[in-house]
Image (cartoon, rainbow, N blue to C red; front, side, top):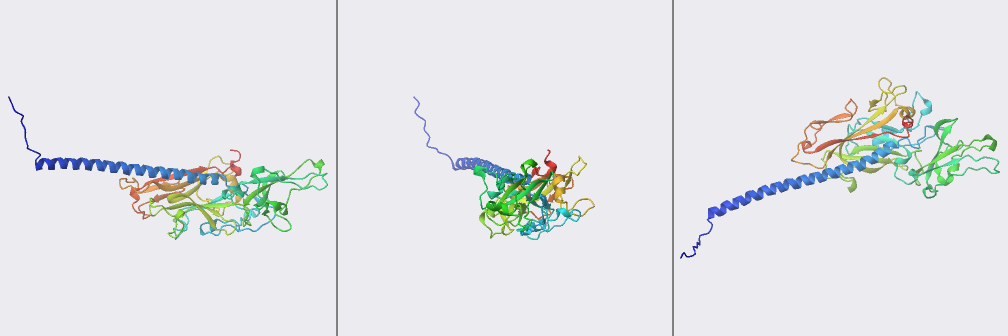
Length: 411
């Protein structure tokens, strides 16, 4: 009979060291893989957040660009004086003191959209050097409630003993009595004019809604004349006395200073050389900007216009509206802007997510534009962008067709 064989012998020190080494290697491999998974997940999350922010912010810009020219006067019933932006980025784009020598009737008339090409700047906190600044004029580009509302008044017809036109009411969407408004006469002599109504005696062109008649009102006709005129009343601002007979928003890139409000600051995930794309609504009281951040981590913005001149079916791209190429050095007039601008293309250079040490951007340059000579080519290496290789750079493109420009009405 065999007895139970027992051994009191345990693991040797060498065996323990080997097993522990194997465990360390396995844990190291597992930890490294886990870190890569977590890093990739965070990168994807930041990228998704960037994409969502880009979609929301740039959609707001697209809506404003498509509203360019809405409620904008094409002429004045008599000359007026008004002021526009006082903020540094936008002063070069003011139309209130601009004279169009080739068309005197267009003096001081605002252009629906325009931009400064590759602006020269020494202060990145004001505006990025080499980027574009775009101006959009139209009643709805402001953020106040009044700018989203309008109504109309029609001529009174005799034989009423006291003919007095009455404004149309929209119930819940009525303009408030204190809203500052302008009056537009859309048709004169059977032609579209969008003429700003100006009081021939006082020269006033704006008033609170409940006193609109101090500006003017449609003429009175006899019943036998079988006709009637209508003026459109546009709300512009809630209660501020107007400095310009329209609203205006500028779009530009700048890097907020450290002393500015927290919601304006550049997020830590952004490359330190980038800035923020802002919408600056020109305030009616001071001419300064009321700023709204649209997109973060932006290096450049370029604006390109698709123009189509009379008699031509071939569109051409231009990144300049302030001068007319190739030989005539003068601004495009408001009428030329209305008739020639078919589309506005905005290109914005930014990056998705934050810095990723495991990623290398493959190129030293990137095209910010359609690639036909308009726009620009951005060079990361020569621009002094730190760690640019570790960011996922991309260019957002917006293509908007302003529906209130006469060249697009039939499309």
